[in-house]
Image 1 (tube, rainbow, N blue to C red):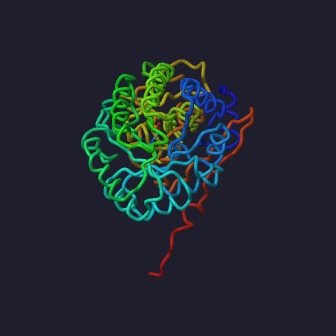
Image 2: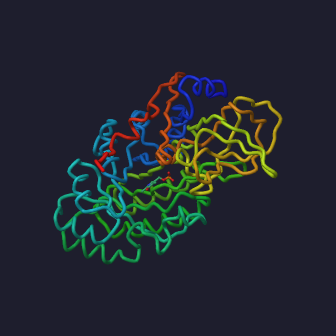
Image 3: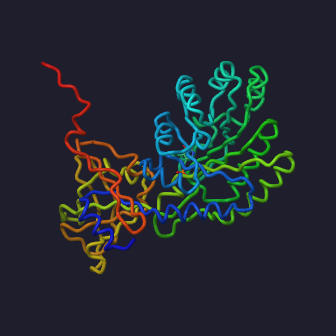
Length: 401
Ligand SMILES: *Cc1c(COP(=O)(O)O)cnc(C)c1O
């Protein structure tokens, strides 16, 4: 997608707007499956929470992906998008037994991440095979907001509690058909990932009815210049070999599963916003756009640096800008960023806006959430309308005072 296509989309659909390029999603999917082509049974379950528009889900379904879901609503959404129940895995954290039972009744693969629910579910439904989420206690990357494998993480059942899992399985007669880990979103180092995988293989030997081993996700994509990208090809090569050897030892060809979100959709996305005001203070030139952290919270929440390009003036002289929003709150998208000269009315494009961007948007300041557009087969398809005032008010109840 070139600048002119993006500009045209901002023109036709209004700003702010999210745009996703289906070709990038398809090529990332292909890249991942090719990297693991030596594994006989590979299953990619797209992590729905990264970008959950139903048209994007349909696209991933058509590519052959399954769906990884974290709430009953995501399960329902995936079913509505056409995923077969057996291609949906439900990996919640801290939800009620009741919600897990609801998901189970819809026929999806259940993944349980605590001993309490495992025991309760196994006692009531010993005939339903479940996957267990293990915490291998391996730190992936240094950012504790997104590392979920450390010792005091709320995610997964500690690897040290395998004896307790075995006791529950024996007491309830339940079947464990899968074993899972998801250590976070920041795999910088393949050896760390392989090390965590070894812990999972070791744990897997305790269960004789496994059908799959799920290695979660954590694949890193570059956001800014100099960022490290997970070397998928190297990981594929090394983990595939190890997995195939493990299957021989285990005596059965298991399925190798992954559940990437960011890797599949991040780079497909652009967020387009218009510059309302260029404001010069004593020390800074601010470019204020018609958006805020209500539409894209990652810079404020995680310190993420999304590359920003001025698609209205791509050849303009570069200057330093702080790009900020219009909500009544500090909402900085970028500090001291070198960008081609910004004029009021210009459209700025934020890159890597596919994952955890729209799905984290809110109505803060009673603003509308943006529209979403899918660029597919060289055509722009509107896949979510801009909200209207009706969306702001529709669930509110005016009482008589
Ligand atoms: C969020 C999530 C993922 C996806 O993580 P990415 O970093 O986007 O690839 C995978 N598995 C589970 C259980 C998750 O909660």
